[in-house]
Image 1: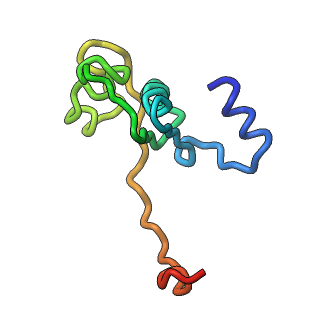
Image 2 (image 1 turned 180 degrees about the horizontal axis):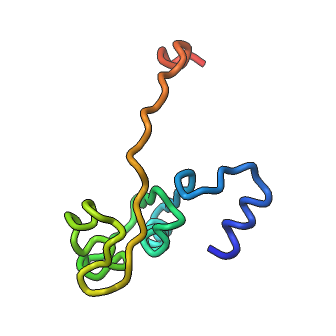
Length: 109
């Protein structure tokens, strides 16, 4: 968080706000991405794990973010029931993807 994000933002043209930042991982990196992402919901609007194991302890895993899914969906900023701490707001609803140009719709490049 203190090294990679500043390095990427200083070397690449990026949109630096939360709504334009995601974290994802494959295999063991999937678990790490989910752990890091749920600990820093104020930094990431999307979190993805691919082909990775998950936390079997839904009540306490993922930094408590999934302890009460219904409450989290109603108010992501409310603290989990055990007092793990406040969960920052989640990403806004996804924007509609623009229509593809006709050349891409047919599969031609």
